[in-house]
Length: 315
Image (cartoon, rainbow, N blue to C red):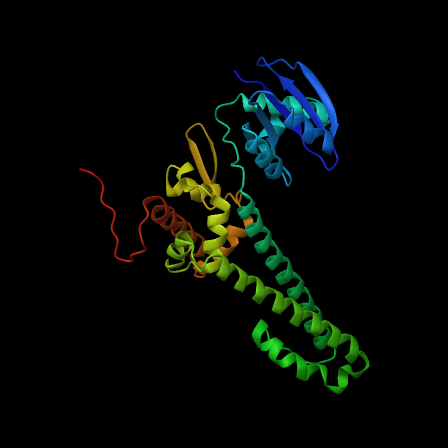
């Protein structure tokens, strides 16, 4: 068994627990950022690093992998049950060592630098979209209070907002409202530039182009799905991918009683939202679930989308 080192990551303090024999901690350390970097570099032989999947874990995971080490990232939800008594950095390291011994817990793949950049791009677009929506709702509320009715759709509202600001009812606040309108236009421009950058980024990406061919899957959904999944072969079937994204029913069963509730919503919220919005029908969730399975099959079997495709089972 190779030496295992559990690390509780923080902003500037890193708690480390070394284990050579299962169930036993040989040494503990508390290091600063640069000291932790040197500590990784000073390991003479390949080490198995255990970390919780968090914001900085992928960076440190790539750094350790570049030096020939093995990195295992565990979801915090699966580590928490193994933590005993109080929440401390020391106990978190012990919980990581215990959770890593469970073969049923699947590790989180270490994301590449490109994957993280794409996720950040999607995150920025979503943040700008949220800020734009907040300001649109603010203006709509102000107009309504002054007796002015604004269109419901975003496109129609943006077209009519410039005329509504010039109405005499809002003359006392016209300057401030024009500032809010300028912010909305700025966020709108940022979102467009973000989408254009994504299109340029994936112009030569065969996988994204193939996923984009599926009816109900656009560039944003295809890009977000590819970035989040990374390696589709780690899922045995399309249903497993749907379950990972939280699109399958939550089960609450005991004995002979089996109860299926609403979808579990335990996966990637952003990707799931894009897929459900892309489905856009009365049975949006069910259709989105189907789209995920289609994408998995096309991705893993390297096929293009065909609406007439029929799978055949061996006799």
